[in-house]
Length: 312
Image 1: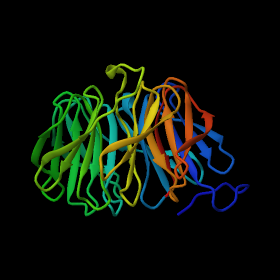
Image 2: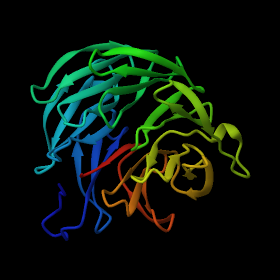
Image 3: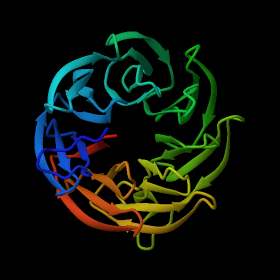
Image 4: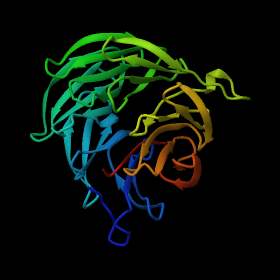
């Protein structure tokens, strides 16, 4: 489903950006590349995503200990979902019926029934859970714990941890390849992306980064976006102010793209023509032409933009 404003062509997509400090969500029209609305939400919004049917936008408001629900048609907050303390990132199952939420302050993943909007239970994980992703077949949930430095593999049927894989310091984000063959986990302080075999539960490779003129400490990978053909990964490098373009087959960086300051997370438009990045310190969003691998636009949003999602 593609959501479009009445004045915009049918091919325009709508992006939502969570602004951590201003407690707002910026709505961006991808045809005009302008902010069309600013939605007031709860305190410290971070993780943000559309529901599978495209009707709602879910946003984790960490300091309010809840997930707020934005109606994508009216662009207003219409409900909230129960979570644990300080929800940060979350993942949905393929059917859009179950939501898994990382609660940073109580070391749990909360399981929520989206249809009933009810909390089903909690899964105990490592210290400061953040990264969340689910396998394409829906059978395996991955959570990364920042302080424990692990990727926890959780069986969604039993809701039990089946494996813990040690990665480099402060893992922030996890992303499955679309063919399910690998899980990529970014380690902010370690400065690497670990590549895990999800069947063997082993690290089978790493992506490393080197930018002339920058100290290693300034290169802090966080968000990861992978093209649907699994050929190219775009990795946000935090205070390095760059997106690394990585050849997935060779696991080598082919290019660095200079974006705004303190780049956090990324999202593709559904046609994969563009990639949007949230730049926390410069309070803007960079627009990357994916085919050209070039930044073409900068859009001012709210204070400390963190997460981004685009209508499916």
